[in-house]
Image (cartoon, rainbow, N blue to C red):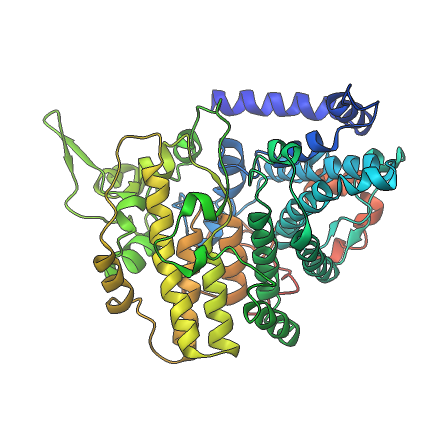
Length: 528
């Protein structure tokens, strides 16, 4: 707890220093290029947007946000069965909120806009690439905020860096924001189709190293994600636009690993690698709650019954020390979700834990923005609902194979020496086609398979996406959540409520959304 307290103190100091005006001054001082007049340096702003701890697999994001909220609400991580288990942490939610707003991604982007607006027409042309690719990150992160909260300030947010005038932003309608993001991503794809990279952009781009093909694929896969998310509430729009994308792969290239199960994960997925100076891991984040025990349904029901080859890189059997010697458990087994805290404390050594090399103690663990598995599972759902069963089967099987490749990549590239050996293609093919995850049954059964595999692939590592898809699809069919006795927090919420700081500081605009600010108010796309 000493470490957490120090971090909280540091965060409090930063928040105090980070008033609106000082944020603006800091940004301008930090990114003014002495070799290019006094205009802030757009390439440096761009790098700052990418160099964001909320995009990386780092302690604070997982310890205070994902593992305390979305991972619990999806049973993708173990959580202690206690009264406050579904009560969100207002201070931690506020941290997440301010990391987007003050100055956060949107504040830095508004500073980019201000600088861009002051350029000549010729100078603007040389900065269009930065503005468009930064907007992809902005839309990606803003859509996560929408998925967590619903309506959010966006169109008027970040006014000070842009205009020198403090204007408290109205809460934009969540459905209208999705439309803005979806249409904007289509426009960015068109721009990137003919854009040319430069050595300057290559240096500033710490995500894709100036590879515009990857940026274009990321843009289109993000659009595909958002279109599928609205598909139960606006099916005609989703169907038309998704199938147009899938039927025109040259116009809309995707992060799909070239539809190869044994693809090059590190070079084809959109992963934000840790800085070379980073030497920490998620060890403390998982231990402190604790969240490092294997979750019941994921291991006992989904993985074990299929003899899933990902089991060996997702979990460790763990064990007990007998007469001074460590004796590993004979098999993988997760604690029942019904265990009380006392039972867990007394018996945890008999049960599996998260694998240390893959995710737990791995200082080379990248931030995951988009993977081929997600894209191909979206393809599979689209084809099953609106296309052909054969195309759905191909996309599904490719996606599962890619998920195996993805997790073995994380394990192989780990800083931890406890590596696993990836099974042969014959073993993986047999698992995909002959186990209980084989693509069979009626349409509903197949959609359940797709949804369950997407949930499994996201896991707690992409907890926000797992929670969004679980709410949208209702898959997988999870066992009953433990019921809390804390009044008002008996079960997991369907959205996060706004942090108290936003309610206080933006009180006038908050009145427009106050009636919707409950943990039981569904988002517009959640009609399941």
